[in-house]
Amino acid sequence: MLLGDMLELNARKTPARDAVIFADAGMRSTYAELADRVRRLANAVCGLASPGDRVALLGENSMPYLECYYGVPSAGTALTMLNYRLHPKEWVWVLNDSESRVLVADRAYAEQILDLRSELPFLEHVVVVGDPLPGALSYEDLLAAASSSLPSSRPDEDDTAWILYTSGTTGRPKGAMLSHRNLVTAITESVVEYTPSPAEQFLHAMPMCHVSGYLIPTNQFRGGTVVVQGAWDPERWMEIVDGYGITSGGFAPVMMNMLLRHPKINEFRLDSLTSMGYGASIMPVEILRETIARFGPIVYAGFGMTELAGNVLTLDKAAHVRAAKGEEHLLAAAGSAMCLADVRVFDEDDRECAPGEVGEIVVQGAQTTTGYFNNPDATQEAYRSDWFHSGDLARRDEEGFFYIVDRKKDMIISGGENVYSTEVENAIYTHPSVAEAAVIGLPHEKWGEAVTAIVVLKVGAAATEEEIIQACRQNLAGYKRPQRVIFTDAIPKNVGGKVLKRELRDAYSGASVQEGSVP
Image (cartoon, rainbow, N blue to C red; front, top):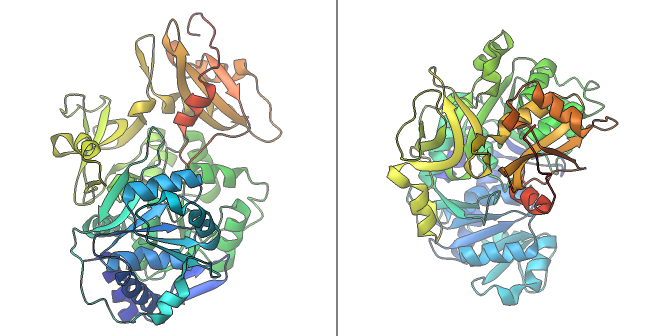
C-alpha cells in the first residue's frame, strides 16, 4: 500500500465526508475534493520533476501543505519538508543538502528564497502558494491545468515518500528518508493502538512540518475528520475544541504546560474530548499529574522520533488509570512496545540490558528509516548490529515498560557519575513556582561537568536558587543536584516543542560555576 492509497479508499467509500477543516482559515474539504486536488498535484509534479527527485515544501499549516503530504509522493518524488522557523540560510543548507529540484512555498517564504536563488544550484522551479510572484509558478494554476486522473506510473512501496530533517537538538540536521512502507506501517500501528474511529474529530495543533503530522493520515485512514489549527495558541485551541466538538488531539508537553497555565482553562467545557495524546518530548511527571486531574483518565502517550515515522512506544489510557489508582511509577514511563515494533535496550557493546539497567533504546521494524539522504556514514552509525540506535537512554522494567532517562548526548558526567537530566528536571518541577526547566552540563574544572538548571518561573511567582536546589535535595542524591540555577524568561525549543539543549550549552558555556563540592 502507498500513502496516497489511504486517501483514495476513503474518497470512494465516504466521498462527501469532511476529510479536513482548517479552523483558522475557514476552509474545509471532503474526501472526494481532497483526492481530486491530490491527483492534480501529483500530475503537475510529474511535469516538473522525475521519479526519485526531491520536492521541497516550505510553509505553515494549510490545505496545500496537506495536499503535498499525499500528492508529492504519489508522483514518485520525495516530499522534503523544511521547518519554516529556520533562518533562510538554514533553508538554503537543507535545499542544497537534499538537492531539491522543486520548492513549493507560501508566498512570504517564496519571496525570501527567490532572493537567495543564486545560492541554490539544484533548484529549478519555485511554486508559490498565494498571490503570483515574478520568477515563480502558481500553485493553483498548476493544479487547474493538470489531469484529475491517477498518475500513469505508480511508485514502489520502498520508494522514499517523505524526507524530514532531524531537529538538530544535538548537532547538524540529517535528512531521514521515510518510504511509503515506513509511513503506512507507522500509521497502521497507530490505528491499532489508538483506535481512532470514523466519527473522530481529531484536532491537529502541531506544525505540519514535524513528524507528528503522520497523525493526520492516521485519523484519515479510518475516515475521520481532522481539524487543523494554525499557530499554536492555547485559548484558540480551547475555542476550537468546544466549537467543533473535538474528540481527540495531540500535544507536545510544552503545549500542555501552556494550556494548564492559561487563566481561562476552567472557562471552557472541553467535555467532548475522549482522548488526549502527548509526545515529541518527555512529559514532566508533575505536569502529567495536573493533566489527568483536569481532563480525567483520557490521557495516553506516544514515544517515537523522526527516523521511526511516528511512535514505537505507547503508554495507553489503562496504564494512566493504573497510575491514578496508586501505581504512580507508571507516570514516568514512556510506554511499552507497540504491536509492529521490536524495541529493546542495548549497552555500549550492543548487548541487551537486563531489566532495570540503563542503555540505549534500539528498534527494528518496517517503520524505521531507510537511511539518511546522501549520508551513508550517519546511516551506518545509526544501524549498528542491524538495529536502529535512537540515541535515547532508558531502562525497561519486568513488565515491559520503558523509562526514558536522557538523550545519550545530553547525559551529564559529573565527578565520574552519570546524571540524567530528565530525573533532575522532574525534581525541579516539584517546586510550585516552576513553569519550565531544562538541565544541562557546563564545564567545571574539578568535576568535569556541573549540573546546571535553566528555569522559567510561572507568571507572578518567585523562587530563589537555593529554593530550587532544596526541592532537588528532597528527591535526589547530592551529585545529581544542580550546582547552579539560571533564571530566564524563555527556553529555546524547536518546532516540535523539544528543548534545544545544544543552544543552551552554547549560550551559557561562559557562565562560571564556582569551585567547590557538589551540594
